[in-house]
Length: 172
Image (cartoon, one colour):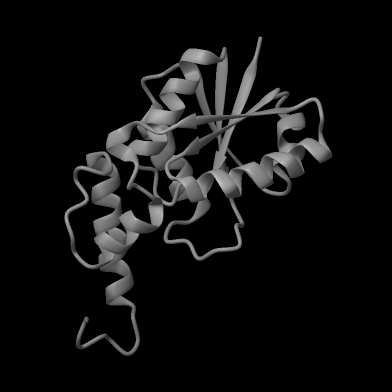
């Protein structure tokens, strides 16, 4: 059995992530979507919230499992017995980042391969940070995320706005 790990922060999960996970599930016996808990970037959702949204997004695909992790991705691959890391590529700048990461991972674990899937054309502009920004500015993200993610984004944005001190009087 070939198990693939699809790691990410998924903050939030969007249609591009779902596309990559679904396509990976056609290639491998099992895909583990691993939600990273402590990235070096600001997040909107807590790890448990992100895992819940990812689970909901892939619930109809029995070949995709969801879990959280921390630490080195390579170490987690070994923990779950994954032989492959799956990554998605949208634009040229993604390639440079993913290429360097794949080389670093190869240095750490020669027995674990990295596979990059090119995103579907309609998802090339999507990133979680773009989705978060549009949602934060009260824009329409319905074509970017499933309805339950859109609802969670709206609730999170409302909650953050309610607890912002001092409140923003103007948005530019």
